Length: 546
Image 1 (cartoon, rainbow, N blue to C red):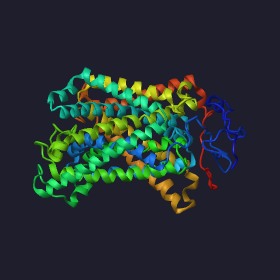
Image 2: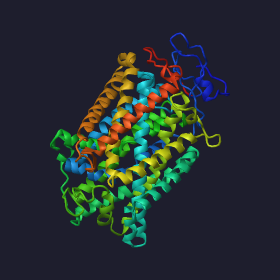
Image 3: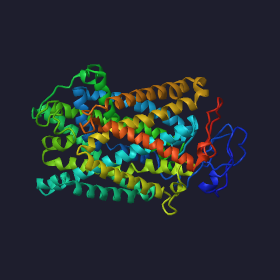
Image 4: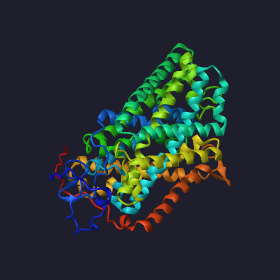
């Protein structure tokens, strides 16, 4: 391994070398870690971006991953819509949604081990398939996070006023959420606060997240325990016997219902890849992020199953009262279940969801900001995005831009549709399938020369990412077609076409338009001059990273 001097060139200098064809690999390039980012002498074309290296450990990465997924927030928004689609097979759908997430996480781990870069999907898809596919993978990640940032802020607003109403015993305070001007103003305040914390160093982020994540997990476990206690004591709303059939997806009824349920269940797992986007700031950048991703997904599925089964056993799937099949409670299930299950401690659930959405709002900024940073660094976007704060070593400009776009998106959506939360959740499901699927296929293709070197490679570099990517591809196209129905999602539509379909198509087409514009303005990246296409060599030497 060759160790390079500490004086690193700027992002502009790192991009300013000659085009890298097969004949041009002599230009020294800045590594991502203290070890050279090359395998068997093959230059990967990756370079540092000025982030704070070694500032996040394994536990910190898992906590930030859990924070980004936001278990309390995601479940309150997903329990109702998922039950509406699949009924008591809710646990089965969560397990089904977990499978492609885990398989794709294995692919992410392999790519990160070979190419630890904060651009993740953008960088890896570019290396595997070239700049056009890579650019769209980056766009998919950014679009998904912008959509969920607006959704997170919306949930935070609802539970902020709910908590105030409970604290002051004044139900009228909770109704303020229905005023679009108060709603949007409060939402913008939350986004501003999250942006301020995200702009600062990763140590600040971790300290905030330890408290917020710990609190919400304790409340969720307590919620599940209390639900089962009510069932055992005969005080549940609609005591429902837990059955093995709840775990059988074949009893859902139709393939479309399975797909609809899976689209929402993917939303509840989304966010674990934030552990990978921090790879340049993580101790052990090649191994720690991958471990954190798989552990995060596993912890989350266990929590979801416990709470979801408890809620089903307590409330059932009826359409009256707090039954999970009641459309009036489906957008915000914990809002209605907290009182009957937790009694006088119901405010804890409101605070847990509030802290969950606020924590996730802050940690979710990590992914789009670092993806935009990488795209600016490699010349796929204006160089302003490559700027790193000289004080905090964070992607300051990219963080602010992400906040502004999320704020505008939420404001527009809030006035277009009163059911903005449900519609954005379903749209997010499509975006997740889009860029997770591309990244999974990038893993398969990039490692194609190493598939049969070992049984391990067959599974982790071929079977797992291929199956995971294929599942997500099927879900993407099925959801896209089904969402054309004006009754899909919340039922909001424009000109008789479902709002979810319109959102998904507009987001993807907007990415194509911006990509073509960048091709005209910055042709270097699209000619492979700043980040070239490659393939993992057949013979890989062990790489030690200090």
